[in-house]
Image (cartoon, rainbow, N blue to C red; front, side, top):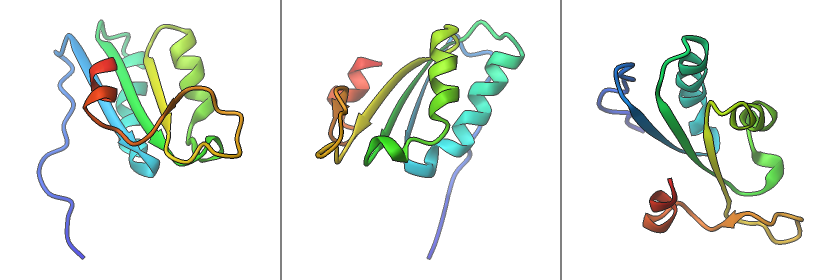
Length: 101
């Protein structure tokens, strides 16, 4: 097993950021999103987040609250929505999903 590699840094001087996560990969990103909110930074933030099913959404209530309070534009997609009542985006993250943000 190897990785992760590279730097994972948030620049608070950014005017706009797009976060992309799948599954538990949201963990480091939620910290950055909270930081933007807590510091009241004037940064337009979007999150494209993919999970298998609705019950797999981590921080779901918090994400909805952040979106409601205009701290985040949220794009959720499900890869296995069958058997659920999910009516939002479906499929894996791809160019089309990234273009939405």
